[in-house]
Length: 174
Image 1: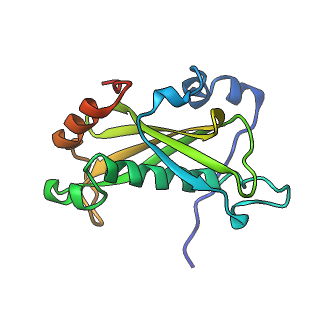
Image 2 (image 1 turned 180 degrees about the vertical axis):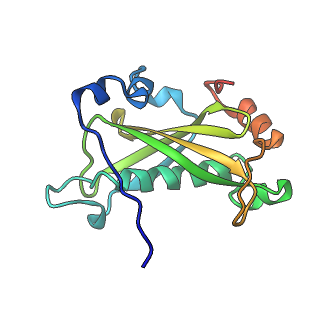
């Protein structure tokens, strides 16, 4: 039987005070005007928990769907557009800042934009709105790598960078 790694979560006060991810999310909350792309969606009954609100992990599903639709909308659909570059993308991390709760049958707008582009990675800022009310701010970092088992990091395709820089209202950090 394989030995599973132990996962330790440090919930001490010192950890939270020094957590760089919390600091990264402390900037100004998103506004609808920050986004040029929105994916509309209605909250399904299956998305809600016993409290009658969207179960927290489902916001990551919303974010993943918005990222996929963003890529399609800008003319760089996942995964087809990456294949000619010998590339794929893999989620490396996400941070979520909850501001409010969505409920069954709410109509939501999920805004997506590329917030930062590095040499081998890029970060999406994805925000969930009910009308103009911000419910959730999400950041997900994707790493570009070769497909398959060996996954060697490679540069973000220049064509993707060009498309994003041309279309984004708020230009990505470089």
